[in-house]
Image (cartoon, rainbow, N blue to C red; front, side):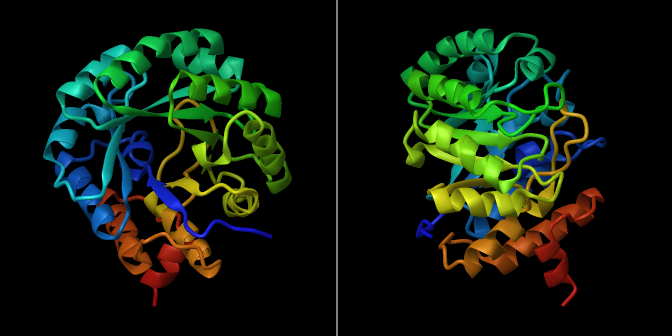
Length: 299
């Protein structure tokens, strides 16, 4: 078995983790969370989302967040900007990298962004062109790669098709999202094998939710195949607002603990990361879904 020597952790807690919170979260709290994560050694942080406040009210302060981050050298502060309007706002606020998302499920695409998968990809063309002309890198997400809340099983070939389209458009990296967390290790391997026939492995990332408790097992499986970029959320915060039953992302603390045990470098201070998870869950009064974080706090 061969594992990567190092893994880049993409911390999505400030965006994906907080976007579905029922109560407003102060901008100052978000900024402190971002700074604590960077201080713990996280080098890629998805800070906010440039989407309509009507649909995601928790991200209404996106510009205030981006413009008031205490930036650290070597840390990328990215934002979700899934359309041209969002990108234009993001550029005004100084965003250096954006992410956009498509789905491997037609039904999910319709319910999420009111268009087909093909139409969503067409809409991304001007976004990519504008971002590239502004010198802003673009990361792509594919949702529902291991299952859909409406369609059930998703064919690996469909995931590969959508992933290739994003890569061919100019996304430097494509993150494969198990949005509802129903995947299992063998399914994850087979899905990745299909995608890797179309896109180099070093251009792929794994974004697995832990709804069915399989996220770490699935990550272990794709690490064996060569994945070296993992999306996670501190304290396991988050869940997809458009996918019924989807619980939080895999906890960053649990991922780092596993990677440490495998001898895989992350550059992240686990103790500091766990303290950050404890702090944010206490601050916003949410349960800490990180088993490692809870265990370390109880020592």
